[in-house]
Length: 260
Image 1 (cartoon, rainbow, N blue to C red):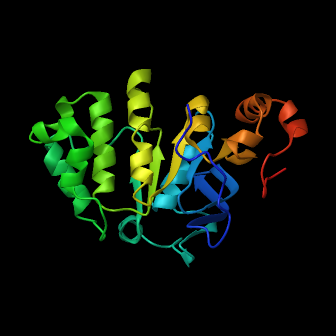
Image 2: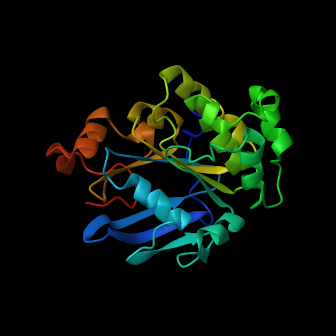
């Protein structure tokens, strides 16, 4: 399967997102330790790693839900480190959180209206979401609590899209979904990217991430253990970086700006 984003990386111009030396604590625990990354317009950038690696913390910090102890987050060349989540949303950073986090007592349509409250000018409307997800219009008055996991995931994506983000943060898109549903959800990425969106996703399913991403970065205990294009990393390097095997040190990093 050829993914929508795993072509050559366009490293020219200004990165849309630039994270520099990010440190985040949860109480006394250092959840992120000096994380840096650059995401360019039109990319699908994947953060991989096991449970507890710091992936979701990174995404939530970029979205403004966690405050870093040190480091910075720049979006479209501007420092947004101190901005509240709603301010970042209005600048174009939208997140589909782990577990969907829909309002179960609201209908499909009402959940989409929540996303539209932060809408920027752009191509995505509730009507276009209904066109993309054919089943949704007919069931727009159904409570989201009554939907399947895959249906809830598509509503959560639709809720983010109607805000017309420039960057879509996807946290554990495949979590709890059957493989056939995962393929269906990821199959939507080409159409989403065609509207000019950039995607930063967190994914435990390494094979899925490698299929769709133009660039990957592996975290382990809050630190970067591997970074590069999927075409430039070996299965042994990915395994070593993911599990923290001793061979990770000898495998080296696959991309520019890699950490030792």
